Structures are given as structure tokens and as C-alpha cells.
Length: 260
Image 1: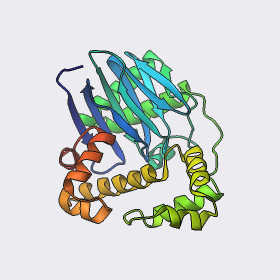
Image 2: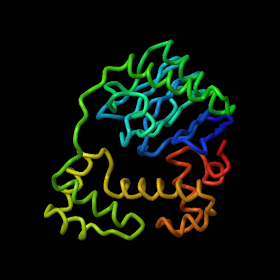
Image 3: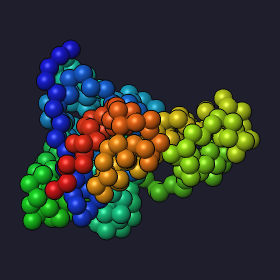
């Protein structure tokens, strides 16, 4: 499989909204999640991904719908790769537009109207349009009307959450398996099974995800990639760059330059 890959990224300076337009032929997303609602539309080709215990395919015209913290990966499903647009919208912004935060049932939705709404929002974001908020409202409400919302669920309160809390508090440190098992009272294998069942990621992947989210905040604040790597627990800038690209499809430098 070969071909030219490209990715263009934008993020709003004043809102929790980010967007990407990309074409991938060989790039494979490592299993990860976002702290935002992620709505995407596949324009050409098809992409396959694992999410919610199953494998799904988004062909041209299909819409992706990921809830916050919903673990997934991604790869091309065709020889020629795929082109797609995706928008990440923070829950706080969705809460301003809907009476309550929804949880979307299906990760792939077939709706030409919804796909058009997302394309319009994506264009407004990358062009810095004055109509951005109007497109944003239209797209979020279109998502809510086309996808069945589920009742809001509470976060885990058992052993897995104790391990998660420890990782959250020390995400930049070298947290050991022994520390996690001591906090939960589980064996290392029972801990792994419980954690993955609850959060969709292994503990090490979850910690790396928290490091990457912290890195995004620091990069957005103007910190250098080298300083960001040191502050968030990565071995060095190259280590940060490698994982940033694997999970987000772009480099830390590209993300830092993406503000509109």
C-alpha cells in the first residue's frame, strides 16, 4: 500500500473545537480516545476501526460518531486509502446547545443531511467564518436528531476507578503495576481485565492518553515540544512526536501551529 498522505489541522483559539481534514493510505491510529465528541464524515475510500467491542467500516458518505473517552483505533479499509473530515467538540460546548449531554448509540451513521451539516461546519472552522457558531449549532442539533441518545451513565466506582484515579493523579510519573494492584486489591491480571472492560484501554494506554491530552494543552499554550515532552512524562521530544502522530495523525509542531 502506498501513496501520498496528508493532514491539515485547525483548532479554535476561543472554543473547545478542533478539526482535521486528512488522507491516509498507510497510517494506522493506535487505540486512543478524545475528551470531546468526535463527528467525522468519510469523503473517499473507507476506513475500518474497532470500537465498542466490534469492528466497523465507514465508507464514503458515512458519518462517524464517537462519544467522549470512547476508545477506538483506525486504518484504511481500501488499497487507495481514505479521505475524511472530523470535528472534535468539547462537552462543555455541546451542553450549551443541548438540554443534556447525549451518548450516541452507533459509531457509524448513514445520513446525507448530517454529512452535509458536518462539511459546512468544517468549512466554517477552517476559514474562520463569522457563521461558525451557526454551523456549530446546526451540526450538533443534526447529530442529536439523527442518532438515538441514551441515558447518561455514571463513571465506574469499583476497583477500576481506583486505578484510574491513581493514574490521573500521577500521569506523568512512572506508575507501576504494583502500585495499581495495591490501590485496587486485585491481581495484575484481574486489574487488566477490569480496567480494559471499563475504559476500553489497558492501564498503560490510558496513562499515555492522559499524557497526550496534557501535551495538547501545553502546546496550545505555546510551550515547545521538547519542554512539553519533559513535563508530561515522555522520554524526549521524539517519543512524544511518535505517539502524538500515532494517536492524532499529526505532529506536535503541526498541532501547535494549527490555531485559527
